[in-house]
Image (cartoon, rainbow, N blue to C red; front, side):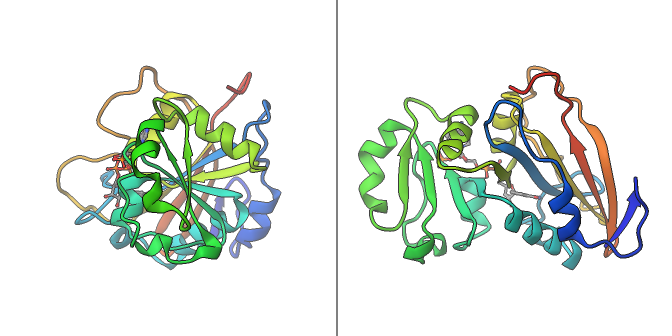
Length: 233
Ligand SMILES: NC(=O)c1ccc[n+]([C@@H]2O[C@H](COP(=O)([O-])OP(=O)(O)OC[C@H]3O[C@@H](n4cnc5c(N)ncnc54)[C@H](OP(=O)(O)O)[C@@H]3O)[C@@H](O)[C@H]2O)c1
């Protein structure tokens, strides 16, 4: 992995660089990093999966970020189609309908159970299906990004990584709760219908980010963007 900007370096020690980064939000809620990969033409999946866009350098950054985080937040569809597995970092799945399959690989390790954020209604009808394999956390009539971050903060998390997909990303961006955006650009033009790291519905306002770093590895370009804050929401 090479750093191109702002401090050119031929052999970057990613862990050291990540450790040195400031990731503290002013209000005490967890710092939220959104991490995604996209092709040159903006596609975030090929045949429904992000894997074909990746390369070892991307995997290295993905794993390093997870290691540095206190929790991973992911949408139910991504957890399902990408067949998430148990992780040493707490995985929090956002699912209004508790639509996950209790026999999925994600629930296969009682020592590393995921946390499921859902509505009170879904918890009332489906929580029993997940007894002993996960913690179901009901956040009321609907699940908000602020509610998820507040709960993770109460659990002692200070840094969380949002791993998509686009629907969940838009929820957090609309609430202006993404502090850092890590985008891996894969050296491929994938074609197909337009996709984006956000959902099709526009945000109520654009969210400007400032470029902080550009890395290069295995032909991918890795950019780090920070949301300038005068006051943190
Ligand atoms: N390129 C990348 O880096 C990358 C990363 C991640 C994912 N992906 C791709 O993205 C695709 C999936 O993305 P997606 O946008 O369709 O789905 P998603 O964001 O992963 O998950 C959507 C689901 O999350 C739950 N959800 C979202 N907002 C919610 C809210 N406000 N309250 C409660 N639950 C909420 C709902 O689950 P329920 O239906 O259970 O209620 C919803 O159906 C896949 O193809 C995946 O491969 C790519």
